[in-house]
Image (cartoon, rainbow, N blue to C red; front, top):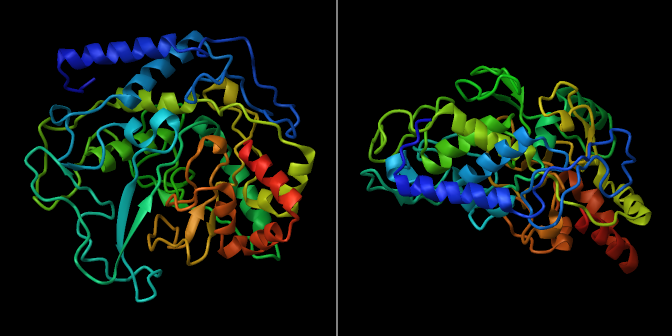
Length: 421
């Protein structure tokens, strides 16, 4: 592996790995998934874990899986330094800064885009945004100028809350044909709920493990990760975050990003990390469990359907029979998402196109670990689940109206159901 580190950092990593191995609730057990389990059960399709911590490996893991999870977990929280290739401009120094304990935050990032006078429509002329849409204010490796918004009236700056990374192996394992099936079913609806697939060009030069995917640069693939579903796989998600958030290059993303100082390298000459490290962090995310859910009552399920929440937040999607993690293969993955793009209306629009996603389109957020969240929606503007529901717009307008028409008791029942996920 080509990470340049000093001996003290390797000792720190060793301590992190030992702490992960010793953490309660991480020992493997004999539980296996039951593909025939009823989807009305609160933990249907889930592999049992304890509640000692959120980012755990699922129950029934093999020793090899557990060791891979623990190694990736350690690297996920490991800070990178200039000598490792950090920068020249960057947002954070580790994955864990944006996804603490597998969840959102405390980090968040900001994006900028040129918009038309309505403040929503993406402008045709994006030339003032010279170094990408992500704002990068931290500097190292000789950089002196941050990437910041131009001083122009038609620049739109928005915040993005990092997505949780819990249960992401379930999402990666979902069949492409399942996503296509749901999109086709919604296309025939008469109520305006018409989710669509974000077909994107695979942006990495290679893949970390061909057993999970054999995509090549430029291949058209189905996006499923990120707020606008612009990333198809977890190794690509990892390599993308290293490059865009930390300025760390890898064989998957070997180029330094453009920057105002014109720097083409950093304090670690050449490609900064090896493909193995990308794979280890992707492995951690693939093996991270969906936390144990609360009680999902029949009344709550009925209201979830009545308000049409389940049209987009589809309770389960079936996974590939050949997914390399056997426990996640050929099961009904309880992710509560169709993984499709939906128009959420102008109030939530961020002006940012992403793949084929437009300013107001966002992927349906998987309803995983909601009870641990402190903020909701793409920019964290909602601080309660009720606020998050009320702020839905666009295709969800009728669902919001149905929610508003519920009695106080039914509204409480539905909120308790969602909060249990």
